[in-house]
Amino acid sequence: MPVLLPVLFLFAGGTWFVIGLLVSPRDMSLLGRVVATVFYAGVMTAFFGVWISRARRRAGGATQLTDVQRGLKRGEVPEDADLGRWSATVEEHHRQLRQSLWSGPVVFGVMIVLALCLALTSTPWWWFGVAIFVAFLLFSVITTPRALAKAEVVREELRRRANRR
Image (cartoon, rainbow, N blue to C red):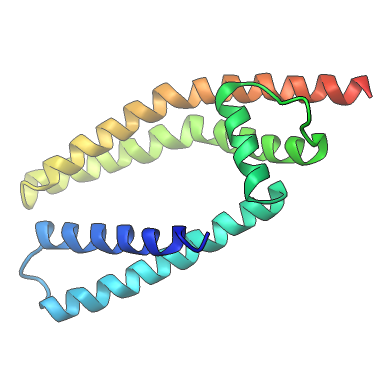
């Protein structure tokens, strides 16, 4: 985690700074943009730091969370898995995926419409936003059902092992 947070700070701050320069280069002085960037990156780093540490704690540590994520990606449960912790983490992941089935397309659809309106009425840089949101929409529509199917396989395996005890 100590290595992740500075990288997250630099990524969030760099992205915010570059997007601000591209979209509205004359709206703010360079010093003001730097201050806003540091504030934004700090808030985002704190938010995601707390979020990641809570997820790790609930899963039983960083290694355990990585094992569960690997299992969900592959659709399999290792023989030495802690059924209690795995079940709780997989259930939470499954709930999030079920919500993403409808929320992903809705959010990215709204963002596409917003970016289109801004591209037509504001700067042409928003066409990149349209392209990015279309890519996110396609990614969401394609990968979420696949991930949900693998999570369901892992859930069934965990249930089978729990009933076998």
